[in-house]
Length: 204
Image (cartoon, rainbow, N blue to C red):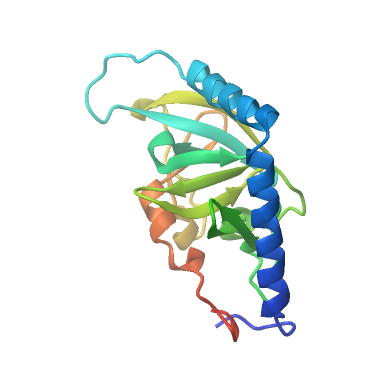
């Protein structure tokens, strides 16, 4: 159980989330916003490198991004979409990992910071949020920027550095020569530290 630093005003939180939902619906109804979303999707598609024939499992398509000064990569199959700097509702008493809540098509989505998992302080900045999951949206990853879609070959990756704590090391499948931490999507989604139970009493 996380130590609470203050009393959560759940009525205020719900009011902010409802206001955010109304604003999101209004924004999505604008022609300019819809056009921009189509352009973003088209740009992401064009940014994908051409498929290269390879043995199964020898290559993986990843999305590179930066957060709190560190570059990460996550397989694209775990990324459902990218939210452009969404408004976040912070929760008093929540752990540093939990940056806040946002709404995705009417559903509450927890948004987290990766840095504390690796012993680094969380950045107090806004930026794009990667919506991560398999069949459905499960988690949002706050980023400074999303840089590119790339293809990594298994032979390029180095083992995770021993300096990483055991729990953090389980989240990293390897390190690219430029220092990018390649995250293990299934381990990330299954990490109990990133599962939050929200109730009237607080964050568990």
